[in-house]
Length: 372
Image (tube, rainbow, N blue to C red; front, top):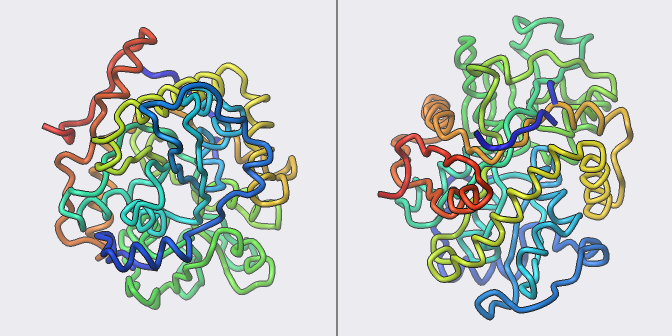
């Protein structure tokens, strides 16, 4: 099994995944997220020979603890070290659908992202835009509520619950859960027995404290921020999954980039695997590194009462937990976000297993969903 470490116990648009040339130009011009200026001031310099002569590799991720591999690997230079003189160009995103748009437009090459946008992107492109090449994290998602307004899971009707973005992984999870509870919600508008409000992760805590939200289904550290602001964890999503394990973060790559630069992709995966091992072996130092990266990206580090529980609620793993991706796709169908999800060929774990083998670790299974 790959090294793992418990690090918490605790349509924006679903169309538009095949980037048109014009869209690529427009999106490339306006951008998708932070270019990470502050990143560049602290990121280790690219040194040595460029892999395959490539000057840079564009990497996307979220400023979330569920993306700890990217945060720590970039902050500590563990990924850059494997790339030598090929410089990392980072971009920070709020949620998966916008990152998929960036991947389609060529604005990023590789990204850390959740399962639902991965499935949607792969399906909408008829299997032509991406591959999942590794796992990164499990868990780290909670339904946090105002305990004065919601005291039990039976109190959700008529309430206002936030998710980070229409069609992102938490949005799918919430819609699926509400459906299971017999509560109807219009997928597009968010209106129904429960009002689902799509809002940027960065804005959710302020909205919650202002009383405009009754709760939120969110990843870390947003969940712990809400708790620090007076919220209460009503449901840890781990309780909904067998053995408490479900994929929350994958590593994906543009198929074009994978075909043209497999050596660069392999180097990034070496860095990812080494970062995960370092996190496992140095949990306190890794938490400090993740917080430093969050400060570099956002201008502010997380307070101890936020970073500590957030860190403990995420499981870091090289395993993409492929079998749970199938379940996520079923949830998206039930939520009305997908009609006929395509999963065959979504994984290519060839390079990951090559890296693991070199480290003396066993190969990871793709649950029959790999490239044939």
